[in-house]
Image (cartoon, rainbow, N blue to C red):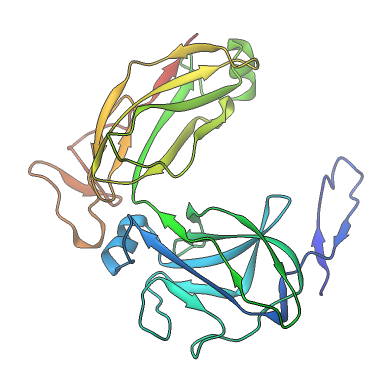
Length: 278
């Protein structure tokens, strides 16, 4: 395996550089996996609503994501059978055995045209043995709807200083109801200083949620009233605001709204920012 340079705490440790052998590229086994968008095979329109044009396999080194250069696929890639959202490097369209022997933690990630991660699948621990069975990556179940919030702290920008002064540690989106069948991609919680948070949700359901700010012990110091959002394909919903329809890839906006940055907005509409004030 080739050496990867990891700069860890370089400044605080006087510029020390550690070497790591973590490198999943090899020739021990093949790898296969698949993904869906909103519960169905991906299409050009659903990939656009997700904001993704590629899906990649990522190997996690103590949660540090390490992509495999040979495992990037078009969002609408198909396997030898023509099934969309499926890859198998052992197939005719694959590259054969491309993963090194070892114990790995793997997941699928959907990325946009600049390489930003827009959605993450579940991770799993796998073992690759020389000439052994193929690695199977957990299915990526990507959702196009989002529910989140922007926030400040008592009217000031969220920062370590303002959060500490207010006694706040973390901020959470808490779901009171998933609408009898809705799904969320992950828990939505961030350090107070982040100033923004959210999670992807399966569209087609009414979600009820509110925002909470908590101290280090987990006590709730601030909470908003619950709000209900009817999430459509690709829509972006913000607590303290509303759901904005997706208008990328030629989608139309409701009457009276204009397309701005892939989302429909009313003329002069401002982005809602909640003020967290214990």
